[in-house]
Image (cartoon, rainbow, N blue to C red; front, side, top):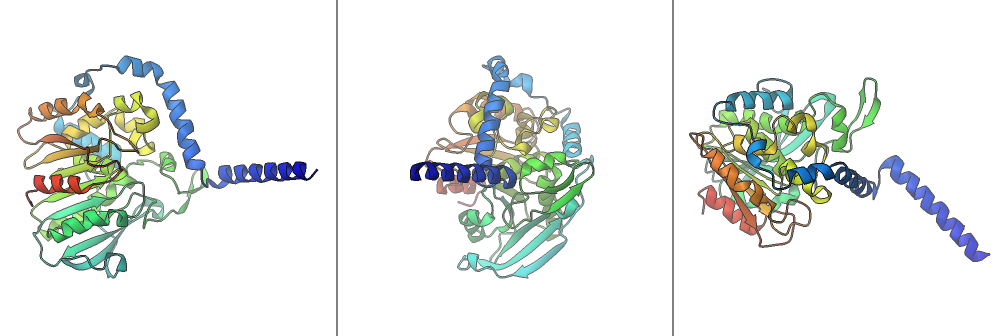
Amino acid sequence: MKNNTKLILIAILALTYGILIGEYQIFPYKQVANLFQANQVEDQNEEKTLQLSGNNVALLTTVNPDNLKSFKTELSRLIFGSESLPEITPDKVTSIKDSAYDGLSNLAEIEEFEIVQNYEIKSVGYIFAPEKSNNRLLLYHQGHRGDFLKGKETIKHFVEEGFTVYAFCMPLLGKNNQPEITLEKLGVIYMNTHERFKYFENPMQYFIAPIIGMVNYAQDKKFKDITMVGISGGGWTTTLCAAVDSRIKQSFPVAGTYPMFIRFEKPKKNYGDFEQTWEKLYSKINYLDMYIMGSVGKGRSQLQILNEFDPCCFDGDDHNKYASFISSRVEQFDNGNFDLFVDSSHKEHQISEVALEVISEHLGIN
């Protein structure tokens, strides 16, 4: 009788916890949802995978020297709903103290910036100003793991080298807020996941506009050049920002993207979040086009860094299916360079010391 009572109690607790998972999206809601989505995607794309096997990437790539300007305009329209970049700047910039960064050598000051978009969705980041400056700006963007504090070693590396560093989190993550908003015909939405941006007009702007806003802010600082480095979702952000804004001269997306045809081939590991697969964008300007757009122009280059043994995503050698083609296509333009570095020095989803050395070499600071 006691055993039966225990079994009933366990069943009730399990049922209750299952209801809580579905209602409040607590652990392991995201993990189960992602697995379900991946299985659905794999089933839906089985035929496409067979069709794209051995595919010729030239057939998927549209941007060329003649249409580059129109592609830039179209990408801006798809992201911001406007043919030109937004003219926003930070709503406020305040000098602060943060003990998490105590001991960073060559650090003179930290300022916090805040950019507020529609529905009071905020982007909060830091400006790390060096004591001895090389008069260069580096934009650092963290990924889905949250606060850019997780990128402290990368920030430290470049501040020590004299760079001013603007540090960003992805929307709704890290220092950013997760507001409750009201949408017409939908009601109240708690913005705690990127998936919910799909209900917005111009959803990509919430990911990209804060970076453009801080590049605008930097224009009167007279930096020699602007570089962007991002990890994971920050690597994705780096890819889009470099493609749409030519003021970003050197870009280093780390473990951030694969082209869609590779995502379709291995959806369980590579398919990605809403922002990485939004069909209204990628059916018109895909990742292959963006790699080229982020690489071309006077003084511009992109070095894509992938971790060979990454436990998260974009690992292995699938980059061989497109990297050399993109490099050769970029050579058709008057200026620019695209290259890809495979980091086999570790088995983590991170920017490694080796990657930092490679980036530094490309920036001419070694």
